[in-house]
Length: 316
Length: 271
Image (cartoon, rainbow over all chains, first blue to last red; front, side):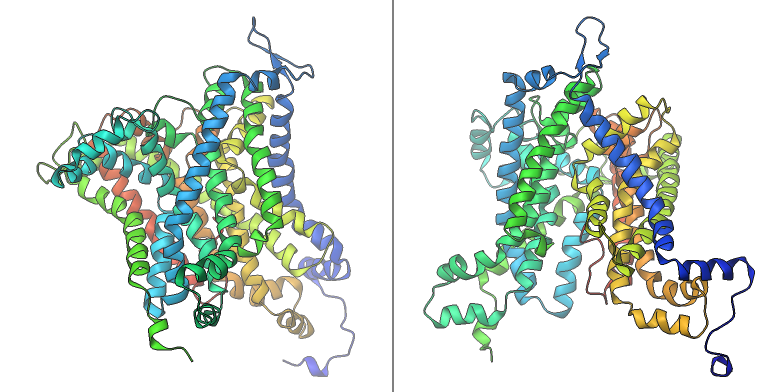
């Protein structure tokens, strides 16, 4: 490079690219605008625009006779949303989301804790990929796998039979709410598949939170006479809580909006996602479908607000 | 100093962690077994016999090939769009300070933070309001929207690690903005973009919820599978396709892992 011999202030660059480069150097704000315009147009206009248009539709109503949308501001659709059957759907979905979240947290914790505190080197990689591969492998294939497992003639029945525990399975299936003809058409089946599919989303943030807990904190607790249960209750759990809350954002939100899992594995009673799908498709009632989508948005909005206060976003 | 006893994990924890990992992996492995079963009318376990004939049957199915081709095309174009938009966004957010930076991060994450059904139905009703017929391009538009975030996450993490003085040095030595991008920035973010692109491809290739709303009569591979799940007609072919999909999606994920493993930010952690 001969840059040293050149004058301090370089001459203007030549050629269109050079001039453009100089121009942007002198006007950094313009460069920023040019860089941000395409993604913002895409996300801000196309995506947010569609989202607002959808929400706006929830304030319209559908004409009972013609089936056309009546473009006048009304709260009638929301009144319809709060009818008994629809409230039932909402309650069922929220209950499912809450139990799925709890169960995922319980199953995820030991995996995350082991990976964060004990796994070293090769094992760390193994744990990481062991969570990552199921997370990214095909959603439908995962559901399909459970359809194979939960089928009446499938592997689970076979295992129960070999263990001579078939009476236990039948007993569970004869219970009122959680039971059904077979596991693949019961709430229990829906619940298991939800937990399975969203579990990796819970493991990763808990692990991230636990990685930051210094090992000597646990040792200090036991040095001071804390039993393992006390150490967990007073040291480990409070420090892992932001991670658990962060993970629960995913499990909760994903369960609230899913319509494919309950359709394939589950009873015929609807969840929010299925209601949205049915309203916009066969029923053609876009306003009510839009009003239904407001439910998860409001619930998640409130949830995120609380989560932020608990510091969950630092664990993401 | 840690004592040896404390450094060893309790047996109960070990078992719980191992059981959890087994819970995550055994169902996927079961699909591999079912791809070879001779049973075609039910999901009977254990399989009455093993055969490789379904691979030949699936290979000769034009509808499977058509769905696969469409999925690959959509994923390729959506990934390219996401790569450009995601990189631009990441560069702007990480290299400069401006009003509303936080809002942009939120905006990018929104399409995957909200349940897919909301993104899907919002786009669908927007298309119908604007009288846009459903086509290949409406599918791409939906996919690109939520693929941006994957590229963005990977690129932002890498941009944070490029020191600003490197760019200044390049400019001081007389390189113009394009040369700096070509010779300094691109080699530095290349692997992160490749990893982000692979994950975006995997995400698009697998996406079904948004696709059901933005596709007309066309069927991508996930849509084909969904139809088989709701009304099983050719169980053996579905088993084979499911197994192939598992194998095909594992490759980009492993690739993305090896490309970004040195980084502090883990690729795909924010799916």
